[in-house]
Image: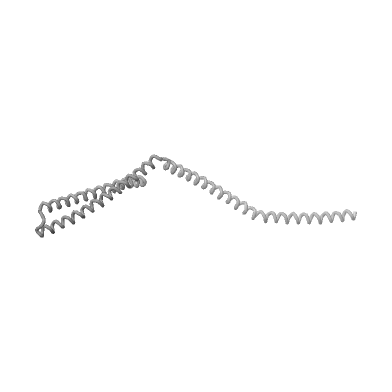
Length: 174
């Protein structure tokens, strides 16, 4: 029987060691549960943030696609683009012609003023004829009228160029 008692005491000691080990493991599991719960919470927060970012990305992609389609639709009007190009070319040509006319009228006015001054000087010296002076003054007056008409045409051309720009700006504001 001594062997049985010895085995019982060994078994009891082993059971005590197992109980101590289980208690230690249980404490370790409880100690690890705190950081594990924290890690799980952080993981859930990251998943939620990731889901929100993915939703924002989908929204931005959809908005970007709508903007691209709107721009394509706007650019997809080749008739309008060609019309605007033709209008711009016509306006540039008109401005070039107008500029040439203005330069020509200014030169004519300068020459008329010079000839009128020469005729007046000749008349003062008693060499000139009064009807030539009158003709020169009439020519100068006609040159001034032409200059005024050219100025009016220039202003009209500028207004014609500004009107589409102002109409476009008004539409953009609306």
